[in-house]
Amino acid sequence: MTDEEIVEIAKVAQSYDFINSLPDKFNSFVAQGGTNFSGGQKQRLSIARALSKEANIYLFDDSFSALDYATDAKLRKELKTFLKDKITIIIAQRLNTIADADKIIVLKDSEIIGMGTHQELLESNQEYIELAKSQGILE
Image (cartoon, rainbow, N blue to C red):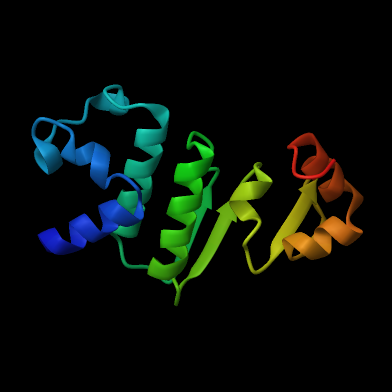
């Protein structure tokens, strides 16, 4: 992997700025368990690491939970472009994280109880509507 590819991936994962603020930048030490990074920084580094591997399918399991809303939005926008020809599966509890997905699957007690776009589910799925209300998306 070239230095340019590493920088591009760091930018997609929204980790470029904080990596460049480290004393040794991209050559900085990562403590065991990533204890020298915040939760959001660790998540972004993990996402960058996943993106560094070429794959047809990418699975992000609650990988955005420690990110603030602004960083989450920027990262999802960059991911959509970077992974445009790939299958991307995002498992999330925050609806804002999945609102732009092509298809959302709603699960309850391991059962699929709804499927559609964000708007379709807001119009038809009571569980999704209740979740949206609890997260302040709907009143």
